[in-house]
Length: 598
Image 1: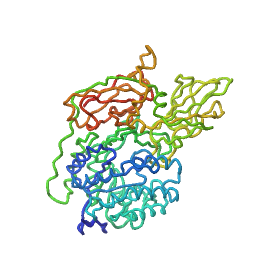
Image 2: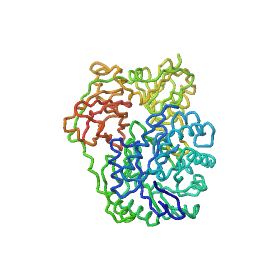
Image 3: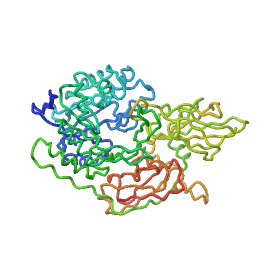
Image 4: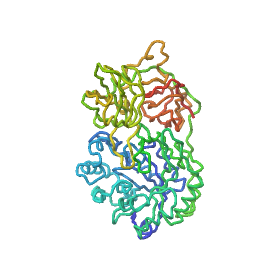
């Protein structure tokens, strides 16, 4: 056991000054079989601490139904075994470029803007969740022989709100849940963020990617004493679909890290190792300075241009940051050796396609119950977190053709009129190019590209949030059915889908062709593949959708880039037959098969 405290100028461990050299590594973005390797990489880089968020929506996907809450405790034990201290940031909101900022869809769908405030109904759920989650953190505090040094109160709250009563409730709740180590907040180094997001008596830290001295000067204007810490040093950045890949020069990142440490501050590299947004958990942002513009969906890879890449290998940035960190260690002992480098799959293997099912058949087998209502229900009302919803309605007739449009669309809708694809809508208020006649049957397949994780539009609902218009008239009598990604992970569920060779004789569109629907195939791997640490799955020419390998959801692919392949942890693969499912949602005539390789 040890005593960790916040001193007037330094962090103190058993009364002695200590500098925290931390790196962010999210346990939920790394396959559990690889935790030990990634933590050893942090140690080899010269870090003495690891930081992680906790995504509430992963662990309570349905109200009152928990899923693997103990994963956090196992990760903290792995950190201790690796010789690292730990910083825990449990939220309840985490941002993190994660779906809905980590808040469950069932919570924000009901409460809307009342989330992240001192609202009684919201706090009932937060209290219950924290009392479920935090005992495993409390018992692993450094003062009880564990690795946990500090726990965060909310997350960058000053970027969102100013409800001090809410922050005080959370701080008191953490103590009530048994947390005895120091608490802290983290915000941008701006006056309105620090006044809105900090609490008297709780350590305030700042987040930035450059201008370290300027950032710490702003913090000192609010907190004249206490240890300085950059809780998020953004040494890289994340990508959006359809945009350029983000890269930060290694020398530039090293120079800023050197500036941070020269100020006598502690640091947390965000990210030290980013990992992957498996299973469609990527979040989204709103464009513009005020984060209220067009939706920008985050890619599946969370490589983040981090010093340890998505596959767990050291980059040039790793070595540059390692050189800087070595100069600020508390002792002169040599840095630990790097663990063995991950081994890529040898050879390239093509999928053999064995079946295809239409989206309608997939929805009929794996979707929820169809509901009927006057207006389109949202994803939240249909209890869909990640996935898609099919809306069906009829245009009354007789009447002449009129424009058909959607108000409040989030995020993308593929529209069929009388069974024929009529177009794709991807704006909040959008209209089909061609008018639709009376008496037509209309289907709108709407896909969520990820809920907003940052800014004033966080927690917004998904699906058709306004209505469907024919000319200026609302079309009522909507039949809606949701399909959750989780449905594919239910053992034996996909085997019930009625697979066939293709949608029609001689159509040239079937399994592996890229047409919309669920494609089933196999990858045959030889004996030598059993030692691979990872592989990349590629779908050249495909449109947009999701991939599963042996029931494990790798995440979303999308032909718009910049991501060109999906990361596959070695533990997911096996020697011999590996089953692959591809849920293609957009349809792509130029699909060129599927390959797995280095």
